[in-house]
Image (cartoon, rainbow, N blue to C red; front, side, top):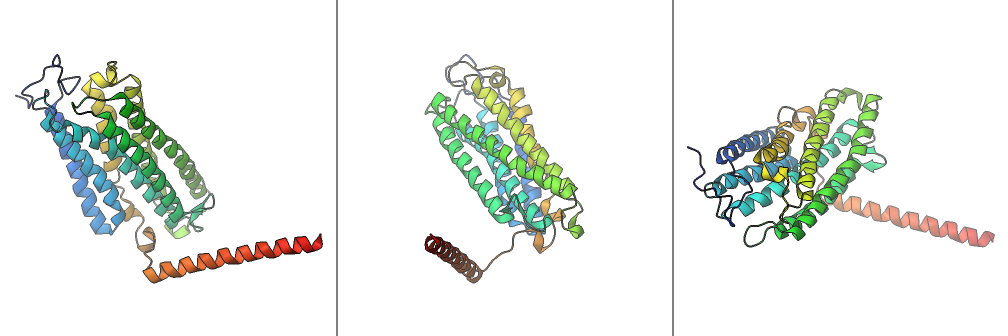
Length: 311
């Protein structure tokens, strides 16, 4: 016997547009649990503490599928379905943030100038993580608004959430230009010679992860475009198999692919991560930047005075 004790699609309180599989949810909760375990061990082993982002993403996914399994026991009761939906909606953007964080360190590790298109590696990571936060907050707002008190999906929240994932995809395309530029530079031999090995593996892993995230975004855009929450569900929302093929599997692969090709193993040593600055060093850098700005301003004022005198 399966886990389902009650599934009545004719009931007005039916939580799924299909009889959901509790067994499938348990399997994926377990698989994401293995990813959490592997990433946690590797973060400690390689001392790469920024990996907490992908660990959190896998944790949200595991929790989402665990609560989904509970929700399948009686599919006419709301139960834990709402938190499950919210976690599934939001976990992928953490994987996106992890990609941005790893790429910034790739530029720091492999490129002698430590910048691409004039953007320094650390600032690059900060910019894209910041953009990711914008997309995340938009998706949080939409995801929260999308589920009403009865557990049904509302159209207004779905529109906001859809806008959030569309924004996320735009940022991915912008980021892709940097990744392609990095790929070209390394192909031309612009990287640090003694660190030239294995950069291509990390680059392809990054392409693959972006592909899994994009697959999931396209799936959600296509699903919500069908009018979910407005009484017009399409085949993507009425067949559970698409949820696992286009949502669960891409996210699992996008996180698990980093285990055999962990950035801490490939970009080893202190240079494999951004340098940790003390509080005094940060204050000194801040003072230096202020002094540079003041010097530039004085120079510009001096040039203006010279121009006025000449006239």
